[in-house]
Image (tube, rainbow over all chains, first blue to last red; front, side):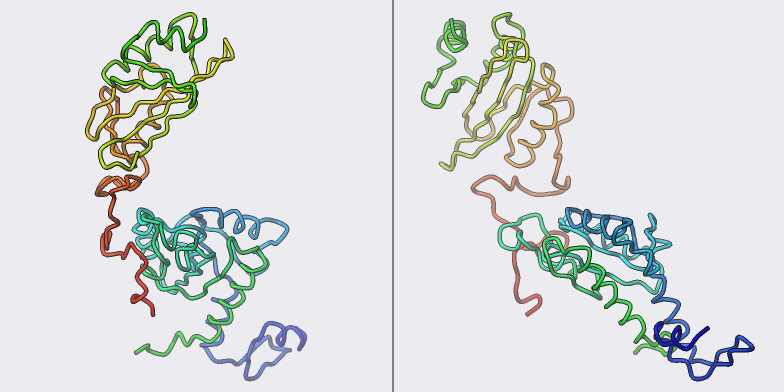
Length: 172
Length: 159
């Protein structure tokens, strides 16, 4: 591997020996590199934002170049993209699905509706005013709906966040 | 003879045709099952297609309304029928005649609390089964919480 590869992939390796295929690194960095490189997302959509999410996952924007693969079960998913209006009826299901995901798990709130209720802010008797009331959100993406580029930027921000994590240290 | 003339002839006192709103008002809701049978089966009517059922609240605290839009694909004609009635009046279901009425009537029940007789599966269609009240009524009061989740905009939650 060339030097450029390590620089591009943001590997803060302490030392490496090219001939023997050996690297010396912090275990935190190695785990974070693995986690950030393949955040498989949970394949479900709630409203029109899901159309943009599907477009982002399709061939033109191609989420798989970030290692993102749609999984149709919470057991195999790492990232939940809440794409659309969270009604009170659905909020219970969203919460339960989040609880079924295995750690480490992340939530991206996509679009105005799941950020804060969106157009249902004032008169929506049936809409949850922000999905962060029921699940902890890592990244918020504004827009109604956000374009696939905005979703991709949100994913890159999430990857940055994952790389700053310290999985081996105990959390207080 | 126009459709409105035939209907007013047939059901004299229980219907009234409004030229201004171009629709047929039914004064006596209990006659609706006979009238619906007539407009479905009579050879001058043949309204075989129920396009929509809309509910509405007249905002006077006592009355609700229903608007039915019919079309005849054979005779290329159109008819709107309206019923206005007091709260808790039972309306005969038209689901046995037009299967399209099934979900429309469930929606009218869900959002306005209009009660239908002889409907095969009378329950809520959109809202959860344990929801209280009928939200599109003018006298509906939005609850503070639904299963621990705040419903109205509550700025104190995040500010």
